[in-house]
Image (cartoon, rainbow, N blue to C red; front, side):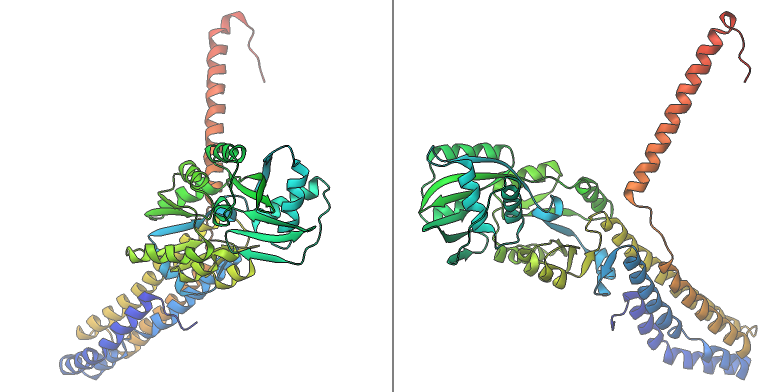
Length: 439
Protein backbone atom coordinates (compact mmCIF):
# COMPACT_ATOMS: atom_id res chain seq x y z
CA UNK A 1 0.00 0.00 0.00
CA UNK A 2 1.23 3.49 -0.79
CA UNK A 3 -0.71 4.94 2.13
CA UNK A 4 1.17 6.63 4.95
CA UNK A 5 -0.03 6.84 8.55
CA UNK A 6 -0.73 10.52 9.22
CA UNK A 7 1.76 10.73 12.08
CA UNK A 8 4.40 9.17 9.81
CA UNK A 9 3.71 11.87 7.24
CA UNK A 10 3.92 14.58 9.90
CA UNK A 11 7.21 13.14 11.15
CA UNK A 12 8.68 13.01 7.66
CA UNK A 13 7.68 16.60 6.95
CA UNK A 14 9.22 17.69 10.23
CA UNK A 15 12.39 15.74 9.41
CA UNK A 16 12.58 17.39 5.97
CA UNK A 17 12.16 20.80 7.54
CA UNK A 18 14.97 19.98 9.99
CA UNK A 19 17.59 19.51 7.24
CA UNK A 20 18.67 23.15 6.97
CA UNK A 21 18.41 23.83 10.75
CA UNK A 22 20.50 20.69 11.36
CA UNK A 23 23.18 21.97 8.97
CA UNK A 24 23.12 25.28 10.82
CA UNK A 25 23.31 23.53 14.20
CA UNK A 26 26.21 21.43 12.86
CA UNK A 27 28.09 24.57 11.93
CA UNK A 28 27.41 26.02 15.37
CA UNK A 29 28.52 22.73 16.97
CA UNK A 30 31.75 22.83 15.00
CA UNK A 31 32.38 26.38 16.14
CA UNK A 32 31.66 25.67 19.79
CA UNK A 33 32.79 22.05 20.35
CA UNK A 34 34.75 20.95 17.29
CA UNK A 35 34.29 18.45 14.46
CA UNK A 36 33.09 15.62 16.76
CA UNK A 37 30.12 17.69 17.88
CA UNK A 38 29.39 18.72 14.30
CA UNK A 39 29.32 15.08 13.10
CA UNK A 40 27.17 14.00 16.07
CA UNK A 41 24.63 16.73 15.26
CA UNK A 42 24.67 15.99 11.53
CA UNK A 43 23.97 12.30 12.28
CA UNK A 44 20.78 13.15 14.21
CA UNK A 45 17.94 11.91 12.03
CA UNK A 46 14.26 12.32 12.82
CA UNK A 47 12.94 10.86 9.56
CA UNK A 48 14.46 7.42 8.89
CA UNK A 49 13.13 5.74 12.02
CA UNK A 50 9.54 6.84 11.55
CA UNK A 51 9.70 5.90 7.85
CA UNK A 52 10.48 2.35 8.99
CA UNK A 53 8.44 2.02 12.18
CA UNK A 54 5.11 3.45 10.98
CA UNK A 55 4.64 1.12 7.95
CA UNK A 56 5.62 -1.85 10.13
CA UNK A 57 2.99 -0.86 12.71
CA UNK A 58 0.37 -0.43 9.99
CA UNK A 59 1.09 -3.85 8.46
CA UNK A 60 1.15 -5.44 11.92
CA UNK A 61 -2.24 -3.89 12.73
CA UNK A 62 -3.77 -5.11 9.45
CA UNK A 63 -2.31 -8.57 10.07
CA UNK A 64 -3.68 -8.68 13.60
CA UNK A 65 -7.11 -7.60 12.37
CA UNK A 66 -7.08 -10.36 9.73
CA UNK A 67 -5.97 -12.87 12.34
CA UNK A 68 -9.02 -11.91 14.39
CA UNK A 69 -11.53 -12.15 11.55
CA UNK A 70 -11.51 -8.59 10.15
CA UNK A 71 -10.41 -8.09 6.55
CA UNK A 72 -9.35 -4.45 6.04
CA UNK A 73 -8.91 -3.98 2.29
CA UNK A 74 -7.71 -0.37 2.35
CA UNK A 75 -5.08 0.59 4.91
CA UNK A 76 -6.25 4.21 5.22
CA UNK A 77 -9.45 2.91 6.83
CA UNK A 78 -7.57 2.34 10.08
CA UNK A 79 -6.84 6.05 10.40
CA UNK A 80 -10.18 7.24 9.01
CA UNK A 81 -12.02 5.45 11.83
CA UNK A 82 -11.22 8.17 14.36
CA UNK A 83 -13.04 10.75 12.20
CA UNK A 84 -16.31 8.80 11.80
CA UNK A 85 -19.32 10.69 13.21
CA UNK A 86 -22.21 8.57 11.92
CA UNK A 87 -22.77 4.84 11.46
CA UNK A 88 -25.55 4.13 8.95
CA UNK A 89 -27.02 0.62 9.22
CA UNK A 90 -29.07 -1.07 6.57
CA UNK A 91 -31.94 -2.86 8.34
CA UNK A 92 -32.25 -6.33 6.83
CA UNK A 93 -29.32 -8.68 7.34
CA UNK A 94 -27.30 -6.32 9.52
CA UNK A 95 -29.30 -5.29 12.60
CA UNK A 96 -31.92 -7.96 11.93
CA UNK A 97 -31.52 -11.60 10.93
CA UNK A 98 -30.57 -12.03 7.30
CA UNK A 99 -33.75 -13.91 6.40
CA UNK A 100 -37.11 -12.94 7.98
CA UNK A 101 -39.76 -15.57 8.69
CA UNK A 102 -43.31 -15.77 7.36
CA UNK A 103 -45.55 -15.07 10.35
CA UNK A 104 -48.98 -15.23 8.64
CA UNK A 105 -50.78 -15.30 5.30
CA UNK A 106 -53.97 -13.29 4.80
CA UNK A 107 -56.36 -13.90 1.90
CA UNK A 108 -58.40 -11.08 0.37
CA UNK A 109 -61.55 -13.20 0.20
CA UNK A 110 -62.83 -16.79 0.28
CA UNK A 111 -61.95 -17.31 -3.39
CA UNK A 112 -58.30 -17.77 -2.49
CA UNK A 113 -56.60 -20.17 -0.08
CA UNK A 114 -53.41 -19.52 1.87
CA UNK A 115 -51.63 -22.30 -0.07
CA UNK A 116 -52.54 -20.57 -3.33
CA UNK A 117 -51.19 -17.22 -2.13
CA UNK A 118 -47.94 -18.91 -1.07
CA UNK A 119 -47.67 -20.89 -4.33
CA UNK A 120 -47.98 -17.87 -6.62
CA UNK A 121 -45.80 -15.64 -4.47
CA UNK A 122 -43.02 -18.23 -4.07
CA UNK A 123 -43.14 -19.09 -7.78
CA UNK A 124 -42.75 -15.40 -8.68
CA UNK A 125 -39.85 -14.98 -6.24
CA UNK A 126 -37.96 -18.21 -7.00
CA UNK A 127 -35.35 -16.59 -9.28
CA UNK A 128 -34.36 -13.97 -6.71
CA UNK A 129 -31.93 -14.19 -3.79
CA UNK A 130 -32.95 -11.24 -1.60
CA UNK A 131 -34.04 -11.96 2.02
CA UNK A 132 -37.81 -11.63 1.39
CA UNK A 133 -37.63 -14.12 -1.49
CA UNK A 134 -35.55 -16.50 0.64
CA UNK A 135 -38.08 -16.41 3.50
CA UNK A 136 -41.07 -17.07 1.20
CA UNK A 137 -39.27 -19.87 -0.64
CA UNK A 138 -38.36 -21.47 2.69
CA UNK A 139 -42.00 -21.33 3.78
CA UNK A 140 -43.09 -22.96 0.52
CA UNK A 141 -40.47 -25.67 1.03
CA UNK A 142 -41.69 -26.29 4.59
CA UNK A 143 -45.25 -26.64 3.28
CA UNK A 144 -44.10 -29.00 0.48
CA UNK A 145 -45.47 -26.70 -2.21
CA UNK A 146 -44.16 -27.49 -5.70
CA UNK A 147 -43.40 -24.37 -7.71
CA UNK A 148 -44.22 -23.72 -11.37
CA UNK A 149 -41.92 -22.25 -14.01
CA UNK A 150 -42.33 -18.97 -15.86
CA UNK A 151 -40.68 -17.14 -18.74
CA UNK A 152 -42.19 -13.67 -18.88
CA UNK A 153 -41.26 -11.31 -16.03
CA UNK A 154 -40.90 -7.60 -15.36
CA UNK A 155 -38.93 -6.52 -12.30
CA UNK A 156 -39.03 -3.06 -10.72
CA UNK A 157 -36.05 -2.83 -8.38
CA UNK A 158 -37.11 -2.25 -4.78
CA UNK A 159 -40.81 -2.31 -5.63
CA UNK A 160 -42.07 -5.60 -7.06
CA UNK A 161 -42.28 -8.13 -9.85
CA UNK A 162 -44.83 -8.99 -12.51
CA UNK A 163 -44.73 -12.56 -13.92
CA UNK A 164 -46.97 -14.79 -16.00
CA UNK A 165 -47.86 -18.10 -14.31
CA UNK A 166 -50.45 -20.51 -15.73
CA UNK A 167 -51.96 -17.86 -17.99
CA UNK A 168 -52.33 -15.50 -15.01
CA UNK A 169 -50.35 -12.31 -14.50
CA UNK A 170 -49.05 -12.29 -10.93
CA UNK A 171 -47.81 -9.13 -9.26
CA UNK A 172 -45.85 -9.40 -6.02
CA UNK A 173 -44.56 -6.34 -4.18
CA UNK A 174 -45.05 -3.51 -1.76
CA UNK A 175 -48.12 -1.39 -1.16
CA UNK A 176 -46.39 1.38 -3.09
CA UNK A 177 -45.96 -0.96 -6.07
CA UNK A 178 -49.62 -1.95 -6.10
CA UNK A 179 -50.77 1.67 -5.82
CA UNK A 180 -48.45 2.66 -8.64
CA UNK A 181 -49.92 -0.11 -10.78
CA UNK A 182 -53.42 1.23 -10.04
CA UNK A 183 -54.48 -1.88 -8.10
CA UNK A 184 -57.06 -1.24 -5.39
CA UNK A 185 -56.31 -2.69 -1.97
CA UNK A 186 -59.45 -4.26 -0.40
CA UNK A 187 -60.55 -3.35 3.18
CA UNK A 188 -59.61 -6.75 4.65
CA UNK A 189 -56.02 -6.37 3.42
CA UNK A 190 -55.88 -2.72 4.55
CA UNK A 191 -56.95 -3.86 8.01
CA UNK A 192 -54.32 -6.64 8.01
CA UNK A 193 -51.63 -4.14 6.90
CA UNK A 194 -52.56 -1.84 9.77
CA UNK A 195 -52.18 -4.71 12.27
CA UNK A 196 -48.83 -5.60 10.70
CA UNK A 197 -47.62 -2.00 11.03
CA UNK A 198 -48.75 -1.86 14.67
CA UNK A 199 -46.68 -4.97 15.38
CA UNK A 200 -43.68 -3.43 13.66
CA UNK A 201 -43.57 -6.15 11.00
CA UNK A 202 -43.39 -6.05 7.20
CA UNK A 203 -45.68 -7.37 4.48
CA UNK A 204 -45.81 -7.92 0.75
CA UNK A 205 -48.93 -8.11 -1.38
CA UNK A 206 -49.84 -10.51 -4.17
CA UNK A 207 -52.27 -9.71 -7.00
CA UNK A 208 -53.72 -12.04 -9.63
CA UNK A 209 -54.67 -10.31 -12.87
CA UNK A 210 -54.57 -6.89 -11.19
CA UNK A 211 -56.76 -7.89 -8.22
CA UNK A 212 -55.29 -8.28 -4.74
CA UNK A 213 -55.47 -11.94 -3.73
CA UNK A 214 -53.64 -11.82 -0.42
CA UNK A 215 -50.81 -10.66 1.78
CA UNK A 216 -47.83 -12.35 3.40
CA UNK A 217 -46.56 -10.93 6.70
CA UNK A 218 -42.85 -11.19 7.44
CA UNK A 219 -41.26 -11.06 10.86
CA UNK A 220 -37.66 -9.91 11.30
CA UNK A 221 -35.67 -10.94 14.36
CA UNK A 222 -33.21 -8.49 15.86
CA UNK A 223 -29.67 -9.85 16.00
CA UNK A 224 -28.68 -10.89 19.53
CA UNK A 225 -25.64 -8.63 19.50
CA UNK A 226 -27.30 -5.55 17.93
CA UNK A 227 -28.03 -3.59 21.14
CA UNK A 228 -24.55 -4.24 22.59
CA UNK A 229 -22.89 -3.26 19.31
CA UNK A 230 -24.72 0.07 19.18
CA UNK A 231 -23.80 0.80 22.81
CA UNK A 232 -20.17 -0.06 22.06
CA UNK A 233 -20.11 2.24 19.01
CA UNK A 234 -21.31 5.11 21.19
CA UNK A 235 -18.58 4.25 23.72
CA UNK A 236 -16.03 4.64 20.90
CA UNK A 237 -17.23 8.18 20.21
CA UNK A 238 -19.80 7.65 17.44
CA UNK A 239 -22.16 10.62 17.73
CA UNK A 240 -25.11 9.34 15.71
CA UNK A 241 -26.53 5.93 14.78
CA UNK A 242 -28.86 5.96 11.74
CA UNK A 243 -31.05 3.21 10.27
CA UNK A 244 -31.98 3.02 6.58
CA UNK A 245 -34.52 0.62 5.09
CA UNK A 246 -36.71 0.02 2.09
CA UNK A 247 -39.36 -1.18 4.53
CA UNK A 248 -42.43 0.77 5.65
CA UNK A 249 -42.21 3.50 8.26
CA UNK A 250 -43.82 1.51 11.13
CA UNK A 251 -41.40 -1.47 11.31
CA UNK A 252 -38.40 0.77 10.72
CA UNK A 253 -39.52 3.15 13.46
CA UNK A 254 -40.17 0.25 15.85
CA UNK A 255 -36.71 -1.21 15.30
CA UNK A 256 -35.18 2.23 15.86
CA UNK A 257 -37.10 2.53 19.14
CA UNK A 258 -36.03 -0.91 20.35
CA UNK A 259 -32.35 -0.29 19.63
CA UNK A 260 -32.32 3.38 20.72
CA UNK A 261 -31.28 4.56 17.24
CA UNK A 262 -31.08 8.32 16.75
CA UNK A 263 -32.60 8.65 13.28
CA UNK A 264 -34.10 6.47 10.57
CA UNK A 265 -34.98 6.65 6.89
CA UNK A 266 -37.83 4.36 5.77
CA UNK A 267 -39.24 3.45 2.36
CA UNK A 268 -35.89 4.08 0.67
CA UNK A 269 -35.47 2.58 -2.79
CA UNK A 270 -32.17 0.75 -3.56
CA UNK A 271 -30.96 3.48 -5.92
CA UNK A 272 -31.66 6.13 -3.26
CA UNK A 273 -29.49 4.74 -0.45
CA UNK A 274 -26.35 6.40 -1.79
CA UNK A 275 -28.25 9.72 -1.82
CA UNK A 276 -28.87 9.40 1.90
CA UNK A 277 -25.16 8.76 2.49
CA UNK A 278 -24.45 11.96 0.57
CA UNK A 279 -27.15 13.76 2.58
CA UNK A 280 -25.34 12.92 5.82
CA UNK A 281 -21.98 13.88 4.31
CA UNK A 282 -23.43 17.22 3.18
CA UNK A 283 -24.24 17.83 6.85
CA UNK A 284 -20.48 17.77 7.42
CA UNK A 285 -20.37 14.24 8.83
CA UNK A 286 -18.04 11.34 8.15
CA UNK A 287 -20.17 8.29 7.42
CA UNK A 288 -19.61 4.58 7.92
CA UNK A 289 -22.17 2.46 6.02
CA UNK A 290 -22.95 -1.10 7.13
CA UNK A 291 -24.80 -3.29 4.63
CA UNK A 292 -24.78 -6.71 3.04
CA UNK A 293 -27.10 -6.64 0.03
CA UNK A 294 -26.79 -5.85 -3.66
CA UNK A 295 -29.01 -2.85 -2.93
CA UNK A 296 -26.41 -1.51 -0.47
CA UNK A 297 -23.43 -1.56 -2.86
CA UNK A 298 -23.73 2.03 -4.10
CA UNK A 299 -24.13 3.36 -0.56
CA UNK A 300 -21.14 1.29 0.62
CA UNK A 301 -18.93 2.73 -2.11
CA UNK A 302 -20.06 6.34 -1.45
CA UNK A 303 -19.54 6.14 2.32
CA UNK A 304 -16.26 7.23 3.91
CA UNK A 305 -15.95 3.65 5.16
CA UNK A 306 -18.05 0.73 3.91
CA UNK A 307 -18.48 -2.35 6.11
CA UNK A 308 -20.00 -5.66 5.07
CA UNK A 309 -20.26 -9.18 6.47
CA UNK A 310 -19.10 -12.56 5.25
CA UNK A 311 -21.91 -14.22 3.31
CA UNK A 312 -23.14 -10.88 1.94
CA UNK A 313 -23.80 -10.39 -1.76
CA UNK A 314 -20.69 -10.56 -3.96
CA UNK A 315 -20.92 -6.92 -5.04
CA UNK A 316 -21.32 -5.70 -1.43
CA UNK A 317 -18.19 -7.63 -0.42
CA UNK A 318 -16.33 -6.27 -3.45
CA UNK A 319 -17.02 -2.59 -2.76
CA UNK A 320 -16.79 -2.66 1.06
CA UNK A 321 -13.58 -1.44 2.73
CA UNK A 322 -13.94 -3.79 5.70
CA UNK A 323 -15.34 -7.35 5.88
CA UNK A 324 -16.26 -9.10 9.14
CA UNK A 325 -15.33 -12.67 8.30
CA UNK A 326 -17.49 -14.38 10.93
CA UNK A 327 -20.63 -12.50 9.86
CA UNK A 328 -21.01 -10.95 13.33
CA UNK A 329 -21.30 -7.27 14.24
CA UNK A 330 -19.31 -7.80 17.47
CA UNK A 331 -16.12 -7.21 15.46
CA UNK A 332 -16.78 -3.44 15.59
CA UNK A 333 -15.28 -3.36 19.06
CA UNK A 334 -12.03 -4.89 17.85
CA UNK A 335 -11.96 -2.80 14.66
CA UNK A 336 -11.91 0.44 16.66
CA UNK A 337 -9.42 -1.03 19.11
CA UNK A 338 -7.00 -1.87 16.27
CA UNK A 339 -7.18 1.75 15.09
CA UNK A 340 -6.65 3.12 18.62
CA UNK A 341 -3.68 0.83 19.22
CA UNK A 342 -2.07 1.81 15.91
CA UNK A 343 -2.24 5.53 16.75
CA UNK A 344 -0.73 4.91 20.19
CA UNK A 345 1.99 2.72 18.73
CA UNK A 346 3.09 5.22 16.07
CA UNK A 347 3.14 8.05 18.62
CA UNK A 348 5.32 5.90 20.87
CA UNK A 349 7.68 5.15 17.96
CA UNK A 350 7.90 8.85 17.14
CA UNK A 351 8.91 9.64 20.73
CA UNK A 352 11.43 6.78 20.70
CA UNK A 353 13.07 8.45 17.69
CA UNK A 354 12.65 12.15 18.51
CA UNK A 355 13.80 12.14 22.15
CA UNK A 356 17.19 10.35 21.70
CA UNK A 357 18.06 12.46 18.64
CA UNK A 358 17.23 15.65 20.51
CA UNK A 359 19.36 14.45 23.45
CA UNK A 360 22.15 13.78 20.94
CA UNK A 361 22.07 17.36 19.62
CA UNK A 362 22.00 18.87 23.12
CA UNK A 363 24.75 16.50 24.30
CA UNK A 364 26.92 17.37 21.31
CA UNK A 365 26.75 21.08 22.16
CA UNK A 366 27.66 20.25 25.73
CA UNK A 367 30.62 18.18 24.55
CA UNK A 368 29.20 14.99 26.08
CA UNK A 369 28.31 13.13 22.84
CA UNK A 370 30.53 12.50 19.86
CA UNK A 371 29.89 10.74 16.54
CA UNK A 372 30.09 7.21 18.02
CA UNK A 373 27.52 7.93 20.74
CA UNK A 374 25.28 9.63 18.18
CA UNK A 375 25.44 6.60 15.86
CA UNK A 376 24.66 4.17 18.69
CA UNK A 377 21.72 6.22 19.99
CA UNK A 378 20.25 7.01 16.59
CA UNK A 379 20.47 3.51 15.12
CA UNK A 380 19.73 1.77 18.39
CA UNK A 381 16.50 3.62 18.95
CA UNK A 382 15.54 3.25 15.29
CA UNK A 383 15.73 -0.52 15.85
CA UNK A 384 13.73 -0.22 19.07
CA UNK A 385 11.08 1.84 17.24
CA UNK A 386 10.91 -0.79 14.48
CA UNK A 387 10.50 -3.52 17.10
CA UNK A 388 7.78 -1.43 18.74
CA UNK A 389 6.03 -1.27 15.35
CA UNK A 390 5.68 -5.07 15.40
CA UNK A 391 3.79 -5.10 18.71
CA UNK A 392 0.27 -4.55 17.25
CA UNK A 393 0.45 -7.99 15.61
CA UNK A 394 0.61 -9.68 19.01
CA UNK A 395 -1.91 -7.51 20.84
CA UNK A 396 -5.13 -9.19 21.96
CA UNK A 397 -8.52 -7.70 22.66
CA UNK A 398 -11.03 -8.27 25.44
CA UNK A 399 -14.29 -8.70 23.60
CA UNK A 400 -17.38 -7.04 25.08
CA UNK A 401 -19.00 -10.43 25.67
CA UNK A 402 -15.88 -11.65 27.49
CA UNK A 403 -16.03 -8.57 29.70
CA UNK A 404 -19.69 -9.20 30.55
CA UNK A 405 -18.90 -12.84 31.20
CA UNK A 406 -16.20 -11.80 33.66
CA UNK A 407 -18.59 -9.39 35.35
CA UNK A 408 -21.17 -12.16 35.57
CA UNK A 409 -18.62 -14.50 37.13
CA UNK A 410 -17.71 -11.83 39.69
CA UNK A 411 -21.36 -11.30 40.56
CA UNK A 412 -21.84 -15.07 40.96
CA UNK A 413 -18.78 -15.21 43.22
CA UNK A 414 -20.05 -12.31 45.32
CA UNK A 415 -23.44 -13.98 45.63
CA UNK A 416 -21.78 -17.25 46.64
CA UNK A 417 -19.67 -15.48 49.29
CA UNK A 418 -22.75 -13.69 50.60
CA UNK A 419 -24.67 -16.96 50.89
CA UNK A 420 -21.69 -18.51 52.70
CA UNK A 421 -21.55 -15.57 55.14
CA UNK A 422 -25.30 -15.88 55.81
CA UNK A 423 -24.91 -19.62 56.41
CA UNK A 424 -22.00 -19.09 58.79
CA UNK A 425 -24.01 -16.42 60.63
CA UNK A 426 -26.99 -18.77 60.96
CA UNK A 427 -24.74 -21.58 62.13
CA UNK A 428 -23.27 -19.28 64.78
CA UNK A 429 -26.70 -18.34 66.11
CA UNK A 430 -27.64 -22.03 66.37
CA UNK A 431 -24.27 -22.97 67.88
CA UNK A 432 -25.72 -23.87 71.28
CA UNK A 433 -28.41 -26.04 69.77
CA UNK A 434 -26.27 -28.21 67.49
CA UNK A 435 -23.03 -30.14 67.91
CA UNK A 436 -19.86 -28.75 66.35
CA UNK A 437 -19.11 -30.20 62.95
CA UNK A 438 -15.45 -31.01 62.36
CA UNK A 439 -14.45 -31.29 58.70
